[in-house]
Structures are given as structure tokens and as C-alpha cells.
Image 1 (tube, chains in turn orange, cyan):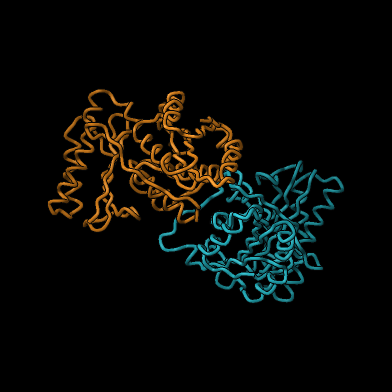
Image 2 (cartoon, helix red, strand yellow):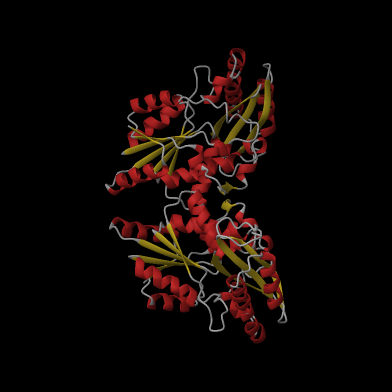
Length: 281
Length: 281
């Protein structure tokens, strides 16, 4: 396995592999791997000749006052895990090389970036899709792998790829959860013991929503009301949003029909957690 | 020569050519070819194995009330000229296929799009770089050719390519002028006889600026003042801007030093003309 930090070096390596007809898989990450990341990596290794994992805590997707500086980083552990999974290249550029002086080109998926997480994080998805666009240009992957936890991110990246005619196939893999149902996230490490325990409530509320739907409920307000009650039943949980939207355009729906995304963001203290389920009706 | 209107078809053709190791040259145009376009096409044919000319009057780069609908179009003449120059593929997609329902991903070179032409055309460069990004993804050219008349466009596209790590080399070729010095433009066709004659004054003002510089003037205000007087000496000429900026970051300079762009936009009636010179000091 190679650890490459330079954009030009990784471009050269990739070009060499492409010339011999090898397929390239990319797993873009911010590092601090958990089983969610590893599920993406394993899938990429199974499907592609050359697998590149990018590890880059992307400053452009953090807002002022957010956790860019304290976001957990542990490169040596990540490298060890990547090596164990037979990854070919770990690409870990510096922020300075990704955003040199005078940097000012950004991609924006304009409407869909303004809803759900985009309300409390107004420049987040601009940062996400811009760095993803950069990584796609640097690595030129045949397939890129994303986790399902940030459903909005996956939907927005998909929209960017389609709108800008990018030559990459996206695969979005299922959320990997802890035993009590909490969606795995590098940010779970921020939680104290009690909040960590209570955070399992988020997935319980999503399962509760699913039960309601399975028993025939189609009314969005009733679902949100039930979820809200369940989440608010533990201390410290501050709901950022609970939204029921169509899973393609992220527009709110009043009555459930088609492919639906039920997504939430909840703060425990300063820690913001997200989770979601997708239901088909 | 092939005329291809479908995005998928042209992608397939290009992929086939790339597999055999052929280099791809792209000349992105809005059609209605003049000698400026032809100079780009000839250069591309000289330098690349496969030359693609895109002809697309891009709605995203026209503001409300601008000349999108009346912009001159003459596809059959353009095809004839392209064929004579041994172009391989003319790619002429429909607006609907480039911007389907729900389209919302745009690239923005944020700061440099707000100055010079960006002041009176606030969404223009967002439209330009977005369609250029799309064309780069569709055609995957090794080299793309741009005219020097829209200097700001070329500088902004260059910034996008660098910032987003795109895999294309840009070549910006010199402005081609009419005998009286007027920069060739599809929009010159809008001018009535008198305005057409008076429009030659724009280049005269730029040459006047160069004379001042050659005789030792370094003061921006004096240069702009002299140009303004010369342009205003003919009827109907309404100055949009005359700017003296550094040719990399497009920031205004008070005293000339380094690589300098002197750019102007002037209305004759509804017709907006641009021109520029670059000087090195």
C-alpha cells in the first residue's frame, strides 16, 4: 500500500494504472475509520482493481464554530486498517495543497443544499461537493463509494454527477450501526457515557416511524410528532430537524408516497448526530 | 465529420478514440463562426488527433433581458466551415439535454466572477464555467482552446481548472480583429453601419493606452481617463467599464507593474462589446 500526499504524484500513479486498463475505486473519507468506512472499503476492494482511499478533513465543509479543529484524526491507525483491507493507495493531501492561496472555485448543488442539514450548515454541502469534485478529477475513479448515513450528501453528490456529466458511478452503501442501533460516526467519540446511551433513541425513533408507516400511517405530521416525542424523552437531546422528504429532490411531502427519506439531526450538547431511513411505498 | 447532438453518443465516440491513444482537442463555441473561432479550430486541428467543436448557445450564461433569444445562430454554415477545417466532431446538444428538469449544479469561481463584466452580468461567469465544466466532463479533452477576446473568461476558466484539479490544458489564442481593429465577435452583427464604424474606437483606445504606457505612463487613472475620452468622442458609445487589473487575480492596480489586463465593455445601443489588451511591464 502506498501513502501519497501529493496531488501530482497520485495523478501520475492513477494514470499509470488506467493505461493498463485497471478499474479505479475511490472511497472519499475524513479518516478515523469505523465499520461504516470499512464496509465501503471492502466493497471497493471486491469490485475494483485499484482502490484509493482519500483521507482529508475538508475545511471547506465545516462552518465557523464547527468542529474542524477537534474533528478526530488518527492517520497511523487508519493506514493500518487500510493496509489490512488490501487498499492500494491512501491519498492524504494537506489542506494547503487542496486549497492554495487564491482558491475560489466551488461547486454548488444549489437548491438541495439549502434544506435539511443545509439550514443549520449553510455552506456545508458547497464544501462537500467541491472537494468531491476535486477528488473525482484527481483520482478519476470508475466507481466512488459513499455511506448512507449522510443521505442528503449522497443525493446531492449524485445530482452533481448527473448535472455536470461526470464520468463516475456512485454506490451508496447501507448505514452500519452499533449494537444498540446508533449509526456509526466518527463524531460518536465526542459523546459522554450518558449521551452515548441516549443517542440510541435516534434510531429507535426512525424504527418507530417505520412501524407507524407499516401499520398504515401516511400523514407526515403524525410521524414527525411521534418521533419528536420519542427523541425528546431523554435529556440533552436538542432536535435540529426531523424531515420527511422525497428521496430524489429532497422536497417535503405531506403524505407519504414513492421513495421517501426520513432524516433527522439532533444535538447532544455540542455534538450533532444525523441518521435516516429510506422507505418505499 | 460527425454532427452529434446526444451527450451519451459523443461520450461513446470520445471514449473509443481515447482507447486508441488519440489526443482530443476541444473548441467550445456558441457558433456563428468568425475568423476568431476559425483560428482556434485551425490550431486544434494542428495539435490534436481528434478535434471536437461544441456549438451551444448556453442559456445559463445569459442574464434576464440579455440577447439569448436573438443571439445569431447559423448551424449549417458553421458545419460547412468546420468540415472545411477537417474537424472530426461537431457536438451540438439541445438546451434541454444540457439542463434537464431539476438541474441545479453550478460551478462558481467566486471572487473573479464579480468584477469587470461580472458587475453588469452577475450570473454570467457562473453560467460560463458551469457549461465549460460540463463540456470538459463530456469530451474529456487533452487541450481546450479559448479566444483572447473574453480575457476574464479565459482567466476564470483557468482558475477553475487549477482549483478543481481538472485534467485539461488550456490554450488562449490572440484576438482576431477586423481591418479597422474591431475585435471579431458574433455580436458585431447587431451593429448598424454607423455604430459599426465607430466601434473601431474601442481598439483605438486600447492602442492609445499602450502608447501612453510605452512612453512611460504608469498611472492607471491617467490611462483610463485618456481611454474614456477617446471612446466618448463618438456618439452612442456608453461605457460599461474600463478597468486596469492584474492579469492573474483581476484585482485593480493603481500603478502598472507585472502582467496587466486593460479591459473594457462598451454599449452601442443594446449591443455590448468587449475588448482588451494584455501588457507586460
